Image (cartoon, rainbow over all chains, first blue to last red; front, top):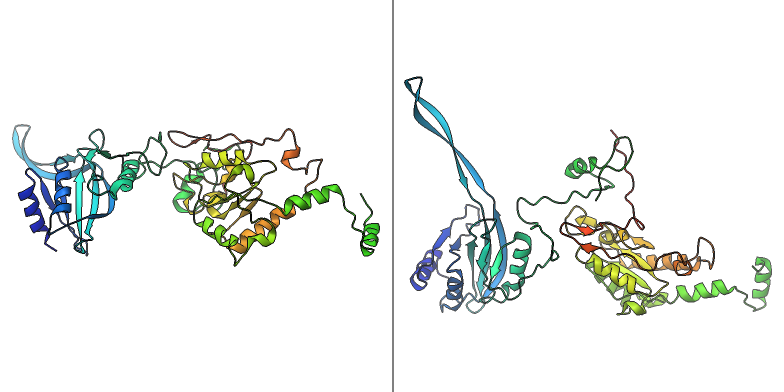
Length: 216
Length: 205
């Protein structure tokens, strides 16, 4: 199997305008991945599948990642005029990075018995621009898994043949795997509550044994 | 009712005397037709119960039917998700009276390990009346057999009149139950208050 750098170079040589980036991994497995731009993701996927040296014909897994908005604080020393005297003052700069959603594909080659190559595609943001090109036309096995990502993360896959929710029902307005998902507070009673559940259930248990605190 | 001593005396002479009610219940309890219907891992145990090693047919309930119209016992075997709950209630409504329900396994009776999740119904007894609950995750086939025998005992004790009569002999008892709708956040309603109410828990502090 070629190294990721070689694959990146060949993808960029074959697919014009493909923004490919190698994502490092600090974990002990050191498993790095390729992040591609969403405009050319379909072409990159087709290249990876059809290239005779790669033949990545099997998408074993597709899943999503939610990257919430991050705020990084940085302390900077700035010179300022205070009461006519120039002084060095410490100021905190807040840098806001908008979050996004990411689809991750694990690709293997059944023909050449090699892999995995990990492909990542990011959406523009977490609100309106949650569109990604569907890779189901490239790997049929991604169909249900893209439906699952659409259901649980809310990524809309353009070009998917049958994009419906998979685990939750149509009309359910939340995406449960998003980081900002608030689970329903429907603890009418718990037989043996403990830890977090105890804290949540307490709100529903009146201390005087009167009327029930919350409803489902 | 016939005197017990006289009945014993007659049975020694080879004469069986019984009431119509006992005969009726005896026939019904030994011909339960469960619905072929499983949701998760408990269904595998239910299948095992029906196979040769545990042999459900010894107890007169081996005729698993594919149609709710032909079955009178619903074994809710497995995790009932909120997406699946309306269909389970609808199938129950389509079953013919008299009908019974066994909730099999921790998920079916309470939500089990998924109770604190967002997508699992916290027990099918919130929407339909359950006759026998089987604890376990999943319960062994012996537990299902025991539940069936418990249900048979329950049926054999039913009377034609009075408060102990089965639901199909009570004109005021419902045979259909409202089907919940999958709403934007949860099932609406989240439970049927006619069937189930949460127990009142009192905080200890």
